Length: 439
Image (tube, rainbow, N blue to C red):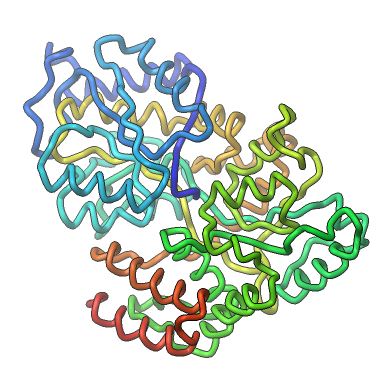
């Protein structure tokens, strides 16, 4: 899940509109308060009228049409998009500042899946009655789990995400190699591909290594791909291990050898995507949204119809993705929460999610869409992506997530930039996490 967005398109069907009407009634839609709204605060899903949707920067351009579809059907309950920065860390900070001020400026929040515990524990978002969101049972269970805190629902999954390995299929085919399953195979493939005259100047691999949330994800995937964990199933940190060291060392050695370009230390999702689309990378770890953009034939991508997608490689076998995605939650301090609930159901509907993947290639949360024949023809990575999401590892589900991810980023970044030996970085991280994560 790219840490910068969430988008969709096209008008919803009459059947969905009917279900929304039922929801509106259940949420107090017939109270004659159309346009008036509640006074904000409290957890009841009451009040109708205009709302604001706080979300990361819409790099797909699809969110505008999606919200326009809602607004055309709900002229008295219009949604205004409050577009936050591309950086997930800055998005989170602005949402927290808004909540701490008990401001009603944001109604619906587009939350990274890993923020649920923090926002719920601090009562910044409203607990949601599950019977008001009847489609939850049709979503991938792993995505619904990200929307809960202490077994209570605080958000609705609208997009999911799993890391994918994008690769230059045209170059691999010419070099006579297949998509790699392990890190060694990827390095060997790079050597063969770079022997081709047209690939001589390309770098082997890049992910997201700037000191931000993307680094937490890439570090976690490297550790998991080597058989290690950051936090175990028991909820306790366990990152000072040989397995975790092997994962971190793979990244450190990648920068030292030049397998990962020097510029890679500055890459977030978008700079890395652009480097891949410019033909500067043979392999690139990123999210599903990249597929549609890299395949554009409007001149923005030099590799349209020249790349393939595979599961992430690991140390000795296929790797493990970090679970990504975005959930929509209702601010505890929002006005017009009944409208907010309807809007979430609208955006989370099967039809809306199908339209979204058709436009943006973002991963849906509806299980049925991964088996849709037409979608699989257009997006051949859907089957492995579903398996990736179902087996993905979550980042630590902790209330102090901001402090935890900062600690992970600092340790990993120190090792990647050569300021801290990898073993020392992990030992220090273990100590820091042990102080932050308490049972």
